Image (cartoon, rainbow, N blue to C red; front, side):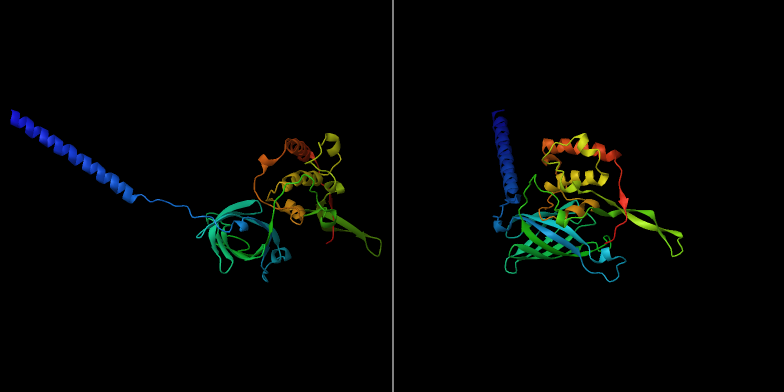
Length: 301
């Protein structure tokens, strides 16, 4: 009996020892399999920031309309992080904000920046750094999915600053919405005094109120708005968002803000950036816009 007990204890000790060794081996295997990720140091932080400017369709002799031949949009690229092997940031144009990852060639001063590729509008930026500018081109990954698969890029480094005093420049702005039209009737008298009518395209137009009413600074009242045109109120409202760097999806609003020196599109959502006064004014403007009427007239260019 004593001998059997000793043998049993010996087997148990051997079994426990074997389990301990197995566990140690497994732990060592885990340590061997694990990868220690060391973050690469950031470099060229002086290049971080926003580069904003023209995103221009290259000339297409086969385009059906002059607008398609020479159409400029406003693009912003933000460089957030640069390491030895990667560049991170995002692009924003026409209300579409896309992240990118790429590389920076220090010798050539060039960036190759790829958007994710899971959206039909994604593509690759190949741009050269020239002092405080980025110049080059963008090409869509899916050239069949977009109307203009290649565009020229000319961007200038800019500091985005919110300023409630920013207003449309009267000398550098139009009051006509060239993107929204409807057909109307025009008329004239011929040499015999007979009235001749014809179809004519008419555009919406605003008043000079878009240069004076500021919904970021002054509390608006119903009295302030009751005599304004619908387009007036739309522009006054969207000037609030433009001051915060909102990138407009609708071409109607881009045509009024893209040519303002102070306008830098940096985001496709700035709702949380609005002040309490701005939120209150936007709500009031929305109420009036819903029932307001447009004014249309015929304009030459």
